[in-house]
Length: 415
Image 1 (cartoon, rainbow, N blue to C red):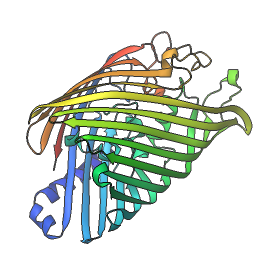
Image 2 (image 1 turned 45 degrees about the vertical axis):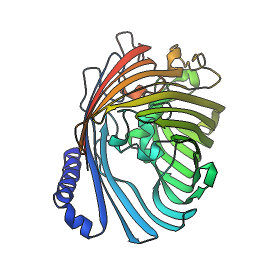
Image 3 (image 1 turned 180 degrees about the vertical axis):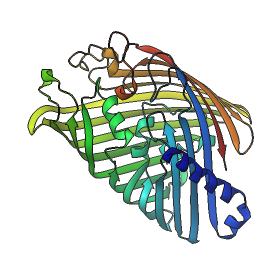
Image 4 (image 1 turned 120 degrees about the vertical axis):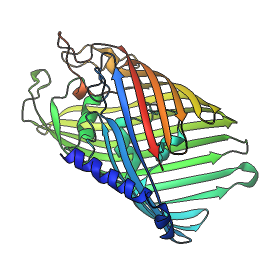
């Protein structure tokens, strides 16, 4: 019932505001939105939901409002509902909301729930018309991390600096925190993404602080730009054991605490456009330092890094047809690209340590409002998907297949 109500609220809002665009323009408010419906079909493993038999649990509904009360002040808000398999469930929420004061081109301030830079495309990942792919490369733009990557509740500064003959430089610095309710599916799926089985369930996730830095250089070479982004979080997560695993001295009901002194992401990016051709490459490195305790007794201490990268391209064959593709890899541990140390009691599946993705996609632009995308993926490994979504096979194995495929289709209306 809640899911249907959420969909109805967003749909009515979009219908109301698009039915009389002149009224919204006369109030000095820009209104945009989108509705999309997708289809996912996988072989063997599940891709965030029951996709082995085909799934329609892949949709988004959003509407955003932006206005400029004065020449130097901007305000905006986006309301979103999304369903991605076991995540989202079409619950209506404020996706981002901010106030912005631009003093000079080189200096402005923002406050609110601010869209954060991560790589080149995180801030525009919802604008379906701006990208060829259905799924951005999961090595950098994980779908399960979308809500935590997109917005930061806090304040920041930003600006653009003209380097004359050297092009231009833009920067952004944000500091704040995040709300990650423990009962949300994203927090539970994060556990399953990094584990073979999930014998604990989150009770609370406290992001004590997080800061984000972004730096982007538009070079003097036409179409060439570089970017670097960095974020660091301090996190305290508490959970309780839902089953006993004597091999690691964990028993049902035990209190489990994961204390992250650091959780850092660094992304280095480059993009080149020439006419209808786009080439892009990005590399991400994630550093984690944490301590896990069972009932106050230290169990595991970690200080290691994970990484990933991709190379991609797209070509606008005609105004109405775009072709694209990429190859992406990500690893649970930089020092263990073959997954030898990912094993746990009862688990000898090394491919939980990596995820490799070869993607081909086609985007059909029907008009200014509608587009249809078809996309195929060949996956090797299971690092980027959650154990919570999988169904054990007859032998009790949750991840039985290293090589598997995904077919995705999506239709979007944007205004």
